[in-house]
Length: 413
Image (cartoon, rainbow, N blue to C red; front, side, top):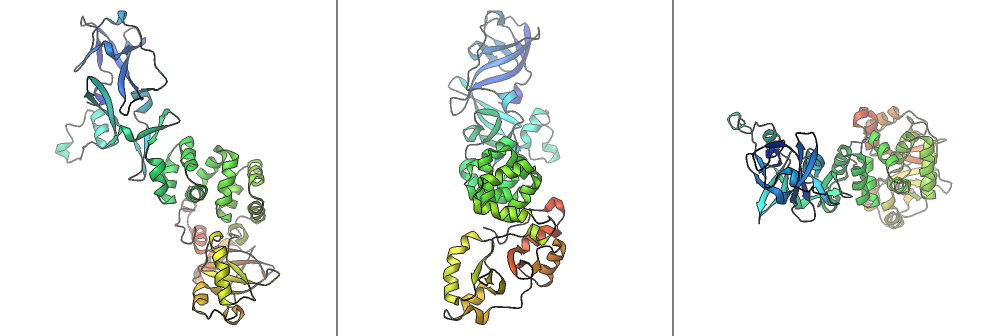
């Protein structure tokens, strides 16, 4: 049977006297499949009474007691008890297979060894139709009303709070999802559930997920989680994304998080925050691959092995002078095809397409499109290299606000 079969079912004394209606079903979560321990009854006198299951004679068409309700001692709820209607029905679970949030529309109950157990939750249209008493008329209309069950053994609660359900398998399987898929789930969950999921991921995976979450939601999540954890995620995020997020936070909160971050990362972000939001400096990232101009192609390859893990894109390698001025650019393909002893200065491009840190972001996007670039260097005072703007950043600029940060990270970690 289903929980919906019991909702508001009339309850009778052994004498046949109606004493009220079922209000809830109380189960114990101490077993793999929870056992019904008691029912809550709304009595005719407007009093709610918890009746132990041992006093229930029948739950067929009606619910009949073995003993008069006046002679029954009330069931005292225990710590691990769950009220199925109040705590579970219409709550949400994370459906890992389909990468979405699903609603508990009904619960399936089965009789085993003299006990009634909850064996699963119905997340499909079957549960809704059954509760609306429409399941008999859907077949002629061609509606697929088959049950869609998640076994109870795969259901868990967050911190034993059964108003917040998830799948037990989520901590293991959710880590295998793409950050964008995890972000879709996080966007749909409540604050505490979202933070719990982010906290179950390692720093890098959590940061990648946070980058894919909607901007408004990012702010809520960062304000809701522990400050040290928030600072750790900012450390792992791309500098441009982290700077955008900090700019949306209240000044006091942003300053607190900057103080908790690694000094080098914090310094980079403070510099980015100095630039107006809609300029090249405001949207650039400070993570880029660069080498000194006196190296050979072989030495550059050795150098790139060290810096590759810390940069956003490695397609272009920028050549800097000893004073940090941009003097050339070379592609990774050119380095791979060059003789290892060949000096970088002999084959690098010195006619460089670049933008100033104060250039308008839309002009930057147009320049990337015009020259079909994967990344564009950003300089200050014509030569001083400050960062790069990647093609996915340019797409973010030209897309409508609602789609910002929803672009696939083509050149990210």
